[in-house]
Image 1 (tube, chains in turn cyan, red):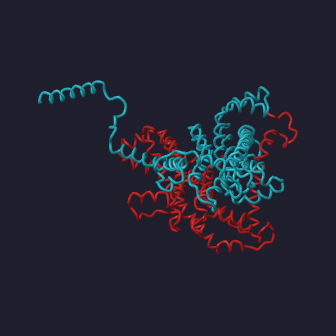
Image 2 (image 1 turned 135 degrees about the vertical axis):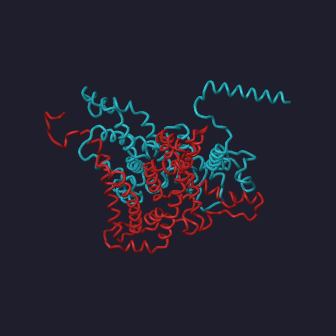
Image 3 (image 1 turned 60 degrees about the vertical axis):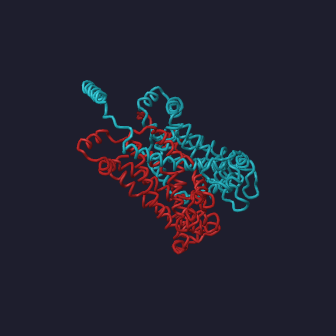
Length: 313
Length: 297
């Protein structure tokens, strides 16, 4: 017994000597299980549960039948998986007298989002390019107004825009909504592109000018190919932003053109009929699906997008 | 460069000017014109249609004697204060934890940020379901044996704001965390080494060195959250529709309802002008701090 104890002590001693010979490498190693780590990982884990819970509940509820929902608890996994609520939410759920389901809202949102994203990015990128490389007198005044305008509550501008759109014969149409999204996307996108183009080396621009390229030539042949990442960031920002919009959709479109978010709210918060919670949750998941896919696919670029959006230049 | 021939100031750099037309129109017509239009018409007695019959401050008097508006303002103050405090504190603490070279940092960040990709409508509806007293948390806890457990914030006038807060924080804290994390990563390693050499405890280093150094990040985040709070609308519509009673009404909803449901345009304009005023109170000091000091740009 004493032998083994001695052995251990001896081996430990030799180990320590070996370490002392090679010298410490890198930072002092921290024990994996320390109070500090337990606190950090514990907190992060608990918070993660709080963050993941709604997604879990949403999906679980959407694949349960109504009898099971009435009997059981919302956190338990389904005993029997059914996709009936999804089918119903997509094709049969009612808003008022219309019973076409969310599919109509989905296609409306697609028809709103695609042109809005393209138009707003096209305008803002050219604009940012003009501000970064072709400064003219007074440009900064308008740019400052634009940035400050981003903070004005939308409610202040809602009604005058209704009048403008009505005068143009666009009130209630999808085109009108596309214009509105282009307008309100402009401050952040212009800022994004202006900052990006300003960060590109100026020599490039000067060389192109010496070679005789003009405003559009430089934009299409040099700036555009060099700034694909920032275009992706802008697209992520706009797709999620426009898809998630509720206020503009409800104000500037007629019921048959309502985007998905508005229709979802009308389906779930309608007062008539028996509440079908599984259908409601399926509809909610369906509406959140597009931005979630964009988020999970884009990963780091999404973070970059919101950071660019948040930190003013 | 272009000293040779100078035909006309207006045509210099013409393409850039053409490219800026949408920006100029937006800045002048929408952001300036439409805002001024609303402010002017808030002094009229427009109801169904805008009319230029000035009535002085009548609309504002009516606004401030309306109990619904008073409740809306109180709500947004309470919600705003709590939301600002909690999202800054939680966001910073989470960021500080994630900054400790934790494993799975990306996984944690992805989890904390994904609600931010979802709309307020989706957020509101999910939490409406989880907080539903018949099926949600309350019923689950009751089924565990606490028969008298009560947790129904969305059906209780004095608690409904906290129900909104739970959902709002769930959606927005991830963004704050991300900004804070970016701020923390921007702090020089040397600062940490110096404070460690001086034997300053970690929490003190955060409180007295790191946070003051991150002032710009905090201010930007503050402005961002604050301007979001003033706009709070979708979440309330989806989660509570302003109920129970008028307990969770907010100014943005008051304005929308006056404009589009109650045919009381000038009331809506007066309400939105008050919202604008609030934003200016937040924005002007910030702009002064941010741009006032330096002359350039």
